[in-house]
Length: 423
Image (tube, rainbow, N blue to C red; front, side):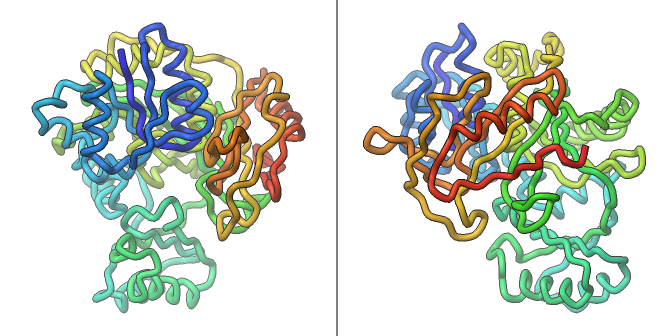
């Protein structure tokens, strides 16, 4: 089978690494890919939302499966584009259709879905520029901290949590009236703050059946102790030590089952990953958000723990036979630490030469914002590389990741030294 992966980050390198292990994968293409995918697949320099160019690559290379990494092409309807095209309609696309992808494309849509299907989540209201005064009034009814979410896609940076009421009002005005996040914040969802510890639950569904993948916990903020600005993610661990069997049963019964049933009831065609951002409040799980693809850097700890042939699993998703697959999980813990460019998540420089990759032992290096240039691997993004390790415990695994990071270098390299600190 010839397979195309859309995307260029650490998530896509990890998916490529896992698919490449399957004897059923003959040729692997990644668009646009990075320096890591270039070593194991054929990179194709096209945009993930250039559907015409994607069609050409699929037809020219006899591709029969497309795995969609990021949310943008899904929210823009790449799956629907394939289904509507006579030449493409039999190509398996792993990722939901556009209507279902709105679960990530619109925070308000997701909240309405959660309430409609009685899935536990925070109370909320949504506002636009015309109702900004009503938004101020709603903020006054809440206890701090105040949670404001841009309705649309804002590259993981559209959520703001503030302790001061006046700051929250100013932020609401900045989002709605001053268009801080552009189109993404023409609507803003204000939620009650849930106090607890966060984790991610990954579900794979073929639209009828589902399988739950290992849990993971990521670390979003740039600074140690979860301080500073939000990022795309600075590291992750799997499994989550505090998610015991009793808690995971609650997640499945109260959240996963009604989510998959709700997709069917609402006629939201779904073949792909549902990433459920959860918070454990006391002993109860509540949904913070849905994403319609795998998370990054969680992918770098979840897929390495999956023992199954991923091509077989994806084929079962495409054929709606996921119930016939038994998911096998590696019982070891996996951890990953993200190396980022100095200055990230604000302004940073690119083109820094990365050295020491060939000296890594007993860890897996997943490339993210990195490209090959003149025989060197150089930085090309904010999040540069994820260093993943296995261990009998997450502490043992994280120690390996940190030992290997000491062998790597690029100018102004930054990373969090406390991944797993809160466990």
